[in-house]
Image (cartoon, rainbow, N blue to C red; front, side, top):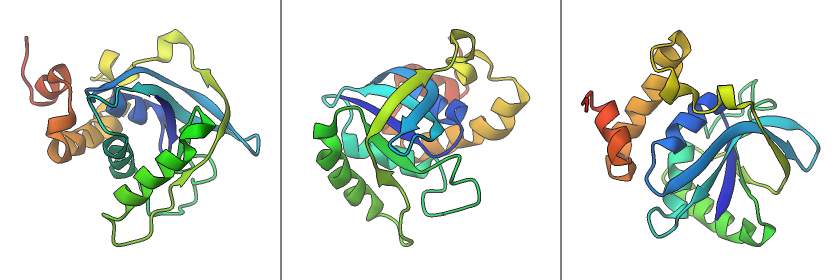
Length: 168
């Protein structure tokens, strides 16, 4: 199953989903919504034999301010976009289940996508290629620390080792 998500910057989302086992083909780029808005998003493949859709959505919710309709929500909508409209109901049920963990209402929505345009190859895999860059250290690394704290069992072996400070 392929899925796209938006909610925060695509460099952050790309790093997070690249770290999960059962998630592959992660690409950052711009997604076109039904109302023709272009939003930063990541598109990826989920192997549901390795990771559940609900876990993927739960990680997504915990990776950004999913209960806030802040001033940047227009540019960074909190959403899940199944690439196949037949998966909308499945994604809605998984979102409803994951959202039940929160006290405040979750603003994340499930919506169809119109198109996805990946960023150039030189921008792909940004965090994992540039972990020492200021943006990566200041913005992405703290999100990765939260991911490791909340979901160590969902991390790939390499991501867990890197985030634990282990070297090969």
